[in-house]
Length: 320
Image (cartoon, rainbow, N blue to C red; front, side, top):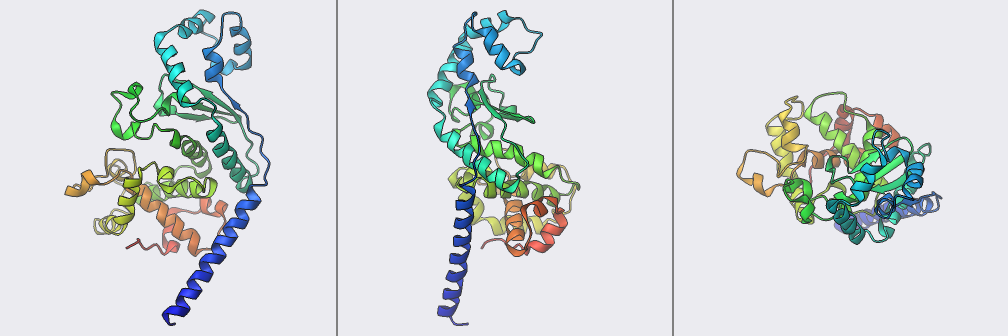
């Protein structure tokens, strides 16, 4: 096939794929969902001794019964809580952008998983409990807004840099999707490095499907520079995994080196300080993407497929 014909064929394939994707997005955009953001953080900041009983009645799950009313009234007058309320109010004056993102997310979620119901979405403050930025129950979604004030906010002094790098507003919606993804995927059945990579790859692929308008770097929680480093060095990272025979290893240290948050990935080479963390997640994401492109399977079938099947049928080749 000469170059001109090859170019025409390639452009035709790309045009067809884009048209199909555009048609799907238009269909999803017509799905009605009912979303209301309950700003409990604001309600609580304005409560008085007279209105506290009504607030407790509306949100009993946020007021443990073992604590008397005076505990909550004292908290209202606490100088730290007052500052938290002020800082959150400045960062989230109306929540309109986040509501639009969440509306689109739930439209996509309803398209692919029609049985899932939209929960009560409630914004709170949590004394910067960054281990529970988003909490999902059967009918409620709690979002701690004081964990999204920006990586340089003084509330986060003393927290490790690689953690607070993602205490940004742009990470709020991806964090919500992660909570759903963990419930939809289930933990990997094998303990191998490959199984764990594919687990995170499924999570990131779900973000591709459920929040397609969010930039790829935000889906994985990288800066643009870190994401570009991962793209530019994908082949070298994959070669390292293969040469060191890591794929079927059950060495738990690999989780901390390449899958869990950290200051960087740990190859034990000079390039470590330049690399972003969680490169195993990044590779797993690309393996899953390759699997979905090269196989006619549904999203539900992907979530059920085991890591070995996905890897072997993915025909994955790292970008050069």
